[in-house]
Amino acid sequence: MSERRTIARVVLLTNPAAAAGHAEPAARRAADRLRALGVEVDEQAGSSAQESLGLARTAVSAGSCDALVVVGGDGMINLGLQAAAGTGVPLGVVPAGTGNDHARAYGLPRDTPEAAAEVVAAGHTRAVDLGRVTSADGTERWFGSVLASGFDSLVSDRTNRLRWPRGRMRYNLAILVEFANLRPLPFRITLADGTVIERDLTLAAVGNTSSYGGGMLICPAADPADGLLDVTLVDAMPRLRIARFFPTLFKGTHVARSEVTTYRTAGLRIESAGITAYADGEFMAALPIDVSVAPQALQLLAPA
Image (cartoon, rainbow, N blue to C red; front, side, top):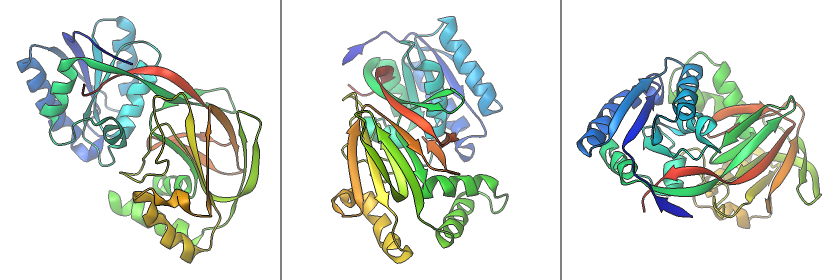
């Protein structure tokens, strides 16, 4: 479902530390273009993710803007979701990250901040689904793209613990360490219809959209407007087979392999001792978690 809204005033939110420092200059360019298009821009920047979230929630709850616009990567978008989901206030995106999987899913301009600003000013909104994660203590968090647990969440855990090297090399080192330590991970997954899956996995992914990690099509058939989540389970495999398997994720051809099982469900429970879950590149919770779909929970500013 889509509609056109008048966008006269926006809060443009940036975390200067995000996106390896690329977000701040992108925000300036987007703000300049929005003002040239007649949109009033309230530029705000949090010094941390927590401060940015507070600014986003205040902007939405105050009712003083026609849209909340975030500048950054998928993590910054995830922050925006926590404020805008379920409120009816549209979320606009100026992509400035490395993965930009939300931008890929919705055809948002990734070439220039000016092009993204033009989409915001045009005011075309799409009602899209979101995923909702409920942790063991009852805490709820939203996600927009893919939630993953298993090998990839172990890599993220390792990356967050490392203090050296910096940047992308830290992530690459974490992959090498976790690959060397790879072991079968016992999972128990319960789908909304009562189906129970108990077996050793390499990873379990839940997709509202199709890709994560900068274009890996882990859930290639996921549709963020169908009211369902796509689940991709990858069986435990020897290291050599896994090394050959991962390149198939970029083409989405892995779903035809015997080691992969896919499901479509309105919700599920994921359990695995000592494993965490990440979504939109951000830490969600330690397992067990409950994951559900919230149909049309977000109004997203997107190309018509």
